[in-house]
Structure formats: structure tokens, C-alpha cells
Length: 158
Image 1: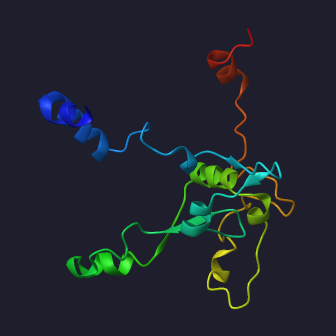
Image 2: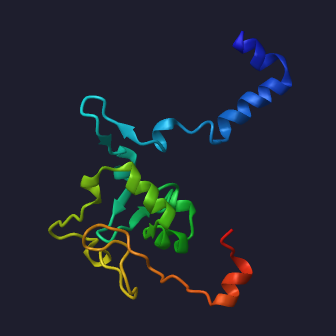
């Protein structure tokens, strides 16, 4: 029956092929963006894909490799080949999402001998780190206090 539907009408055939090629929100497997729980222990399980693809620095930032850095390197130009070996930092929203997908064990600072990422564990040129020594989130920008005329014009307490 399914073979007839795929071969019979052109509309159904294009619908089947287009849904398999594009990856919309409905086609993403649930295990990629959901927090998984261990049924025996009742605790959160770390997402193994996150641990394999990303590296969490001690300051709370996550880094990842450039996608496709090892694919068809002979066809790419030299600029791409040199820049593809760099690591990219994730955005604030991505860091928060990745923090939710792993257990608190992976959120603690790790210290390894001869760590190649040791220079990147400290953020320079920023007045406050994202996470303080207790692991609590710290604001990087101060709150802007508005004067009374601006506050009364744009905000009301009703």
C-alpha cells in the first residue's frame, strides 16, 4: 500500500521525498533536545552527544569544532583549511541549553595534566566571569537605571 502511494500520485511522492530531505522540528528525534532520566536511579542522564561534540571550559563557556572540518579538505581553499581547525564558542543560549543537557558532574571545573585548553579556561578583558566560584550565574552587564521622566513615559505600574 505504501509503495502504491509513493508511486501513484506525484503529489504524494514529492511530499514523501521532501520530508525525508529537510529536517524540520517534527523530524528531529526527541533524544537530541530533551533531558533524559535514568529510570533505575531516578536522576538525570548526561546527553552523550553533547559530551562527544562539545567541550565545557572551566568558566562556563562551551566550545565546538567547525562542522565539516574533515570533509573533502582537498577541495577547500587554504583559508578555510586553516580557519576550520579553530574552535568556535557557543552563544549564551546554547551554553545554557548544553548545561541543562548534562549532569552537575560535568558542570564542575575539571583540571587535567598538560591540558591543551588551559589557556582558554580564564576569560580575559571582562570585568566579571559568567559563573562565580560557587557556580552561580553572575550578570555581565550592570542594570541600567532610568531617570524618572523616562520611566514614567514608557513604564506604568497599573
